[in-house]
Image 1 (spheres, rainbow, N blue to C red):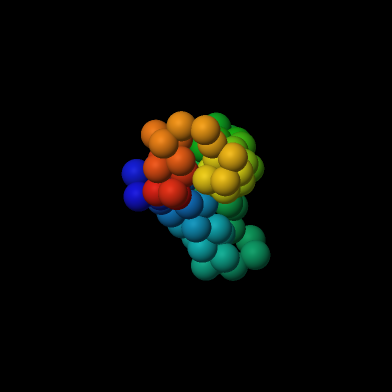
Image 2 (tube, rainbow, N blue to C red):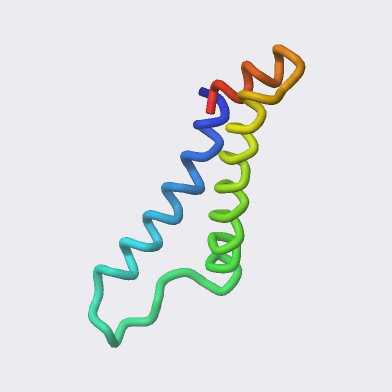
Length: 73
């Protein structure tokens, strides 16, 4: 569950930026500045990788702590 909470904010940010870009006319500039857009562009693959690692850890981890942490995702 804790791992899921870590993913919620970046996912919400990506969704919010994506939806705000879809809401206006073609002549409107995208929202956010270059740093915000770069952050979102880099966080999506980062968190996708984290989900994949959790799947592997769920089956391959040797310690109960890591297995339980992976199950929370």
